[in-house]
Image (cartoon, rainbow, N blue to C red):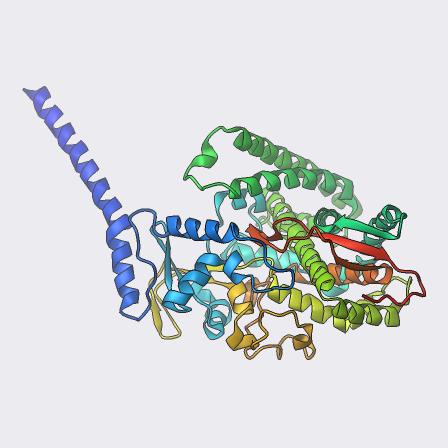
Length: 522
């Protein structure tokens, strides 16, 4: 009898636990989303209806697949929003610029008004935090500035900032120039017959920026850093491949061939970084190091404070490579494509380079800052083809945003690409390549000072933006001295997102060598 009573009690407990779990799932997956949807509806904010468990994920995938299956754009069309950010473009036409979308039971509110963006990033930034990156991205970027929050993020930023001060970066110009000249010498050798050669610039520019990023991060430990970053490049290829496939929750834990390779690479990268850190730490202690490369600064900070660990240094090195290499190479790629599309701006940029530096003298650090035409062109490239098309922030608590009442936990999607292509902000030529809009600087280029945010805004502005722009301008200046270039007949204009904004079919460009005395015409 006693055993039967105990069995009944256990069964009742199991039933109660199951009922409790079902109620909790019902609250999270049904009741709470409905409550949030009603809350925003009362404020005039709508969106595609929430669907149990999956939200709008299925619709988003369908819309994006339809857009990516369309033929490439015409070479001179920069109206890329319908193709690249198709679900946003689609629902904005139906619900307006501010609307709700659901990623599973997680709600996101789209915010494209520059005044509201300024609140989120600047005037009320303490009320918002960076959201968690997807697992694959977290593995790549490590626990560095890209993912850290709060006091730890502020502490790391303070330590690392000297690496990216412009005066410190200008010391890297001879190193950058050597890498660019070596690349162009190889192009010249390839162009011996007829003086013209087709170059697929994506891989070349990735190798170029990888070289500079490695020297900036590792300094005199360059060779060790190069080997480690080669491993991380392999890991990035695996992650990019995974992004092409349908997302299955928990799939990253399955022992598939791709996952096993990724796990092995991650372990090798960490072990290699720890060895380099220990070796460099010994060198720093013996020589009282003063190097301002990323690794040296982090090791010095670890020696003076307990707040910086070996794991922190590993995370920052991974973050720097992940963000730095591809952001810079993409900027260089898109700017080269745009100059190939628009030869009159190529001519103007070349004329200024030649007037300052001549046909062969490499630009000095002062020359780079005086290349005003190239600055305008690079800014316009960042406007039309920003490396990151959107960013997300999460409301820490219940907040008010421009009169809207936002529940805590709501994610705010800032569509950078849409803001950069907004005709009401940039004028009727918003989808046209017109570097002249930046002739008086960034602040007066648009109708609102917060309309241009390729590297973010406020305290979390990308710390490496000076390095990306400096390297891009320097490389383009030397290329313009030596080559004229046009689009290859094989080029297909099909921007796509694979974590960052890429040319889907590559970037084949026809380069023709210039003689020291020639006036190139198109």
